[in-house]
Length: 269
Image (cartoon, rainbow, N blue to C red; front, side, top):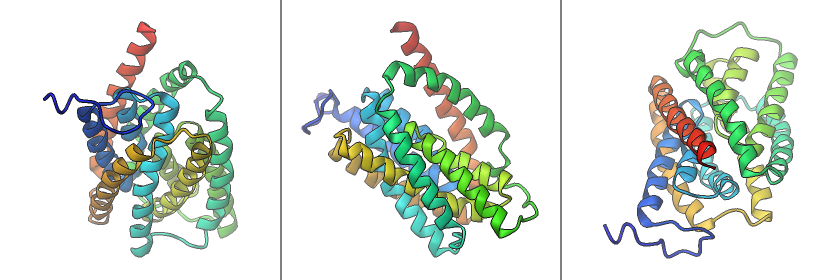
């Protein structure tokens, strides 16, 4: 126990012991698993950093690094399985990159107190979405739009969620699946495939901004990223076999825990 409570021997700008480090890695593994199935891994990974005492801006930035690693693997697996529509994906990539760069720069200007207030709005809405969203359990496919209309809707969703992912992040994948499935009428597998490409783009764009501003803890991000990769590999295999329903209860539990923590912080501030 003394070893677990000893400080991690890395050059960190905050206090972190081995037990906290291990908890972050385990939850980031779970985040990779859930994110690969139905998006929303950030609803687990970002709270993991925050609950263990990592400052908000550093948590968001470092989470981008670990998320990038897992999302890259998931994107490759979905592309290999034929789930990525490469005619539509480039439209989303361009808009997602622009939106994420804008959002990441905005995030650097927002104080921790404002972030907590934003979370009080985002978390309940996300929980409501997770309970009602048919994309998390695989609803019936809707009639397809023309390619031009679909491309425009993909671009709109990518731009809006790109800004959101750069500013905050958690739930981006699930929101994208919802918009691409419900608004753009893409089948679940295709919506998930394009979501991974767009999400990888937003993560990379935001990560670049945070790296330039020195907000990423490289050692923590890399180690947690390896756990995220393993979780992502397990999640993509589960999704291919039709196991998406497990994502909803996990996301709701994490949302509840995170909501209680945010309220407690505001009350004791």
